[in-house]
Length: 479
Ligand SMILES: Cc1cc2nc3c(=O)[nH]c(=O)nc-3n(C[C@H](O)[C@H](O)[C@H](O)COP(=O)(O)OP(=O)(O)OC[C@H]3O[C@@H](n4cnc5c(N)ncnc54)[C@H](O)[C@@H]3O)c2cc1C
Image (cartoon, rainbow, N blue to C red; front, side, top):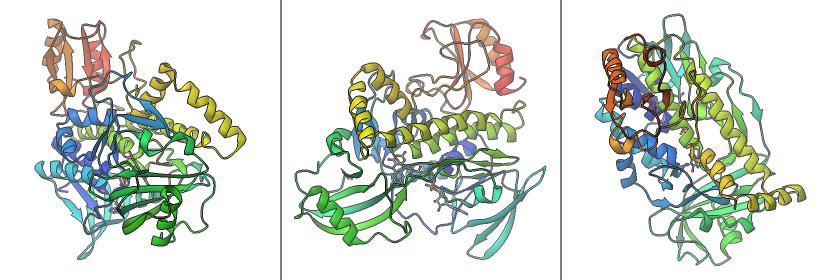
C-alpha cells in the first residue's frame, strides 16, 4: 500500500483535500477520470470565509493573481447585501473562475509532491475493517488499489455516493438554468464591462420567474451568461444547449441587435436540492457536491466544498498520523452536515423569494425592505459568506467557542496546518508546548480572554480559563 488516501475527483474539493493531506505528510492519490482539464468554470467566486481559509494556507495571493474581479457585495435571491458588518480582511467576493481555482490548488499540490492521475476513473470499491479496495480504470485497463481511506469528491453525479447507497434526501425542484460563456461583438451598454458589484449584474426589479444575468469575465468581449426559469424546466435536461437557444435568450435580455460571435461552452443545471444523510460510511467519506447539491444561488457551492475539505483534511491526517483522539473523524459528519443543511435551506429560501406567484412577489417586496436593516443584511451576509459558521463544540459556553478567529491568516497563523494556542499566559503556553502537537504564539492581542486554542481549520476549540489540558486531549490526542 503506497498510498493512504484515495481522493476521487480533482475538482476544487478533491484538490483542496489532497493539498491538506499532503501538507500533513499523508500519502495521497488523486484520481480524475477526465484526460485533462476542460478549462470550463461553473463557479466564479470566493466568498469572504473561503478567502480567509486560503489565506491561512498561503494560497490566497496566488488565487488573487488569477482573479478577474473584486466584487464589493454579494446577494440573497438577487437582492444585494454587503459584507462590511463583519470583521474580516476580505469583506468582498473574489471574482475568480473555478478553472483558475483548480489551477492554483493543483499547483500547490504539485509543490507538495502530488500529481493528479488524469484519465483514471474509479469504477468500483469495497471496504473492510482495515481498508478500501478500489478498482481503477486507466489507459492501461483496470487495476486494484488498496488504501486506508477513500474520499468521494466526485461531484453531484458521483459514483462513490451511489455505490455507498447512502440516503440522498431532498427535493427535485422544478426550475432550471443555462450557463454559457459567450463572446459578444460590440456588447450593448446594458452589459457592464467590469464586474464590481452584484447590483449591476441582476437588477432586483427584473427578477421574474424567468431570470437572466450577464457577467464580464475579464477578457475583452467574453461574458458569462446565465438564464433560466425558476419554476419550469424542459423535459430533457440533458439535451445539448444549442447556440440558437443562447442567442435568443441573450437577445431577449439585452436587445435584438446583440451579436454573439462564439459560444465557448454551455450547459444546463437544475434546482434540485439534496444532501446525503451520512458524510462517512466506515472508511469512505463524501465531500463537496458529492455530498450536497443545490441551485447555485448566492455563489456558495464551490466554497462549501473547499470548506468541507478543510474540515476533513486535518482530521483524516490526524488519524493516519496516529494521534487522532477517539471520535475525531466522526465530527466531520456532525459539523459539515449541519453547515451543508443550512446552505440548502438558504438556497430554498432564496428560491421562495423569486417572483412567480403573488405571494412570493409580496414576500420579496417585504424582504427587500427588511434587508435595508443592517442587522438583517449582516445576518444574511454571514450566512452566504460562511463568516458566521460556528460549530457546536463541547466545552464551557463562550461566544468564541466554535467560531473562526478573524485575521489569523494576516499574522501567518496555521500556515503549516498545525493547531495553535494563542495566549498571554505563560502557564497555558508551557502546557501547550509540552503537548507538542500545537504551535504556541504568545500575544496580548486577544479580545477579552487570556487564551484560545485554534484547530488547523481555523476554528476556536477552547477558550480560557478552564480545561486546556482536556481540550488539547480532545482535539489533538494525549500529548
Ligand atoms: C451554473 C453553475 C454556477 C455555479 N456558480 C457557483 C459560484 O459562483 N460559486 C460557487 O461557490 N459555486 C458555484 N457553483 C457550484 C460549484 O461549481 C460546485 O459546487 C463545485 O464544482 C463543486 O466542486 P467539487 O470538487 O465538489 O465537484 P466537481 O467540480 O463536480 O468535481 C468533481 C470531479 O470529479 C471527477 N470525477 C467524477 N467521477 C469520477 C470518477 N468515478 N473517477 C474519477 N474522477 C471522477 C469529475 O470529472 C470532476 O473533475 C455553480 C454551479 C453551477 C452549475
